[in-house]
Image (cartoon, rainbow, N blue to C red; front, side, top):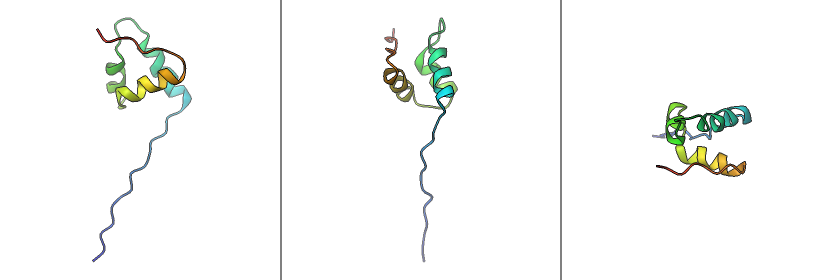
Length: 61
């Protein structure tokens, strides 16, 4: 009996999508975690995209 397991695939996001989320984080009252959660990605991933573009993620608090 052979059991096949589905392979996990990496999701890819366009540069426009990444930029729109980064811009949304700059809005008053917005949090990185909230923007990430609303768009179905991990907050750490969004923070990484920000760092890769030379944008320092805001400090929590």
